[in-house]
Amino acid sequence: MDDSLLIERIQAGDEGAVSELAARYSGKIHRIAFRYLRNREDAEEVVQDVLFTITRKSAAFRGDAALATWIHRIAFNATMTRVRRATERQRRQRRDAQGTNTRVGLRVREIVDHAAWPDTRVYRSQLRRRLRLAILDLPAAYRTAVVLRDLRGLSTAQAGAVLAIKEQSLKSRLHRGHLMLRDSLSDFSAGLASRKHRPGALTNAAS
Image 1 (cartoon, helix red, strand yellow):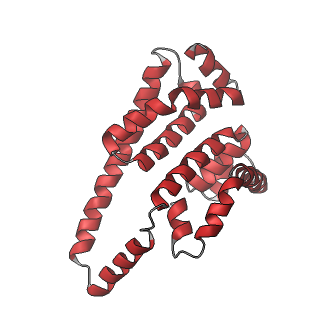
Image 2: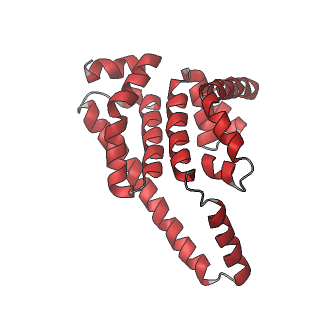
Image 3: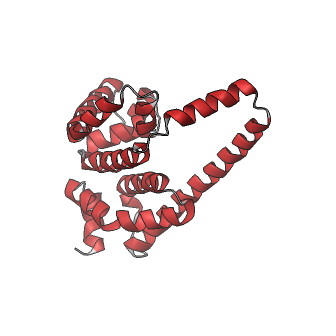
């Protein structure tokens, strides 16, 4: 399908077009992000952010450039934002490390030990990928509520204001979206259950 038709379908609220967009461009976005971030999990988060931005701001695409060019620009900007944040975080960590005492050092080593299970990184990567696809498959009303509230960190009042709906309606959409995600990710429940006895495992998988 021609990109112009694809973006028109997205602008019209066609849910199938969103899935086609993800299938067509996720790999390209991931390669752009990974080139600079050198971390697959971070790159996957960029993919999720970019796809959401495209669907949310699809009306801004006027066809002055190719859709691929527009997506490349969004992906690059999102990647650079994450690079800057990572650099700032590293600087803060270096500053904090200078004032670290023995007690803090022990706590840091303990946290690292908890996350050192051999399959943790693979499991987290698989969960992130499945979660991203599951969110994209949600109907638009529920997907937007989940992204704004759970991923963007907006309060219920803020998310409701963005969507121009009452807080109770936002809560209802969020609840329904969570139920749909739970069903989509039900095959991971056994994995979560097997990890619940491991200190910090659930937090590490979701972070």
